[in-house]
Image 1: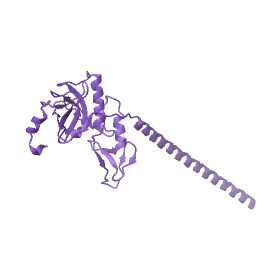
Image 2: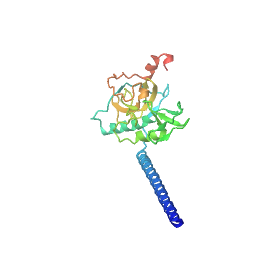
Image 3: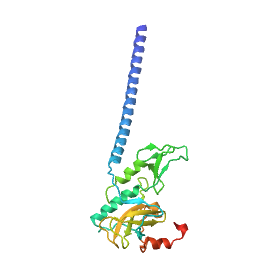
Image 4: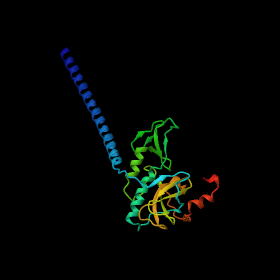
Length: 248
C-alpha cells in the first residue's frame, strides 16, 4: 500500500516537473521571438536612416544688412517645371538639402507626464534634448529627421514622416540686372532676410530655383501656391532709401 502511494507521488512529481519544463520552454521561446522581432524592426529602421548622402547647398542665413553689392530679387513660389534642365534640377536639389539646415532646432520640454517618442527611432525624447520641429508641429531628434529628409530620392518631395506635410517650399528666383555668377543677392522674406549666391550659368534676368523652409516664407507647410507675382528687382541702395528705420 505504501509502495503504491510512493509510486503515485513520484508520478505526480514527474508530471509537475514536465509541466514546469514546458512552461519554461514556452516562456523562453516567446521572449526570444519578441526580441528577434524588435531587433529586426530596429535593424530595418537603422538601415533606412543610414541611406543618406550629405551635400551642401548655396543658401546661407542672412543678416538684416548684407555686403556691398547685394541686390533685392523678386520671388514666387512654384512647382518645378517638367522641362527644367539637368543643371537647374541639380541646383534645386542642392538648395533643398541646404534648406534643411535652416529648420529651427529647439530643446524638448515635456508638457504632460506621458512619454513622447521620436517616431523615427522609437526612442523617448528627453527633457531639454535637442529636437528639430517641422512647420507642421511634429518634433524629432535632429539627426533622425535630417537623415529622413535628406535620404529622400532626388527630385522627390521631402515630407514629414507623420503627416506627410512638406517642410520646405520650392522657389523661383529672378536674377536682377547687373548681377552675375558668384555674386551675392539679398532675398527678403516675411520671416527672414537671406544671402543667396547666384549659381553658375544664370544671367541677369534669368531664373534659378531653390528651396526655403515654409515657415520662413510665411506660407502654410506644403503649400503649392504659384499665384504670387514676381516683384521688380531694385538695387540695394534704392531699396534701403525707400524703407523706414523700423523696417530693418
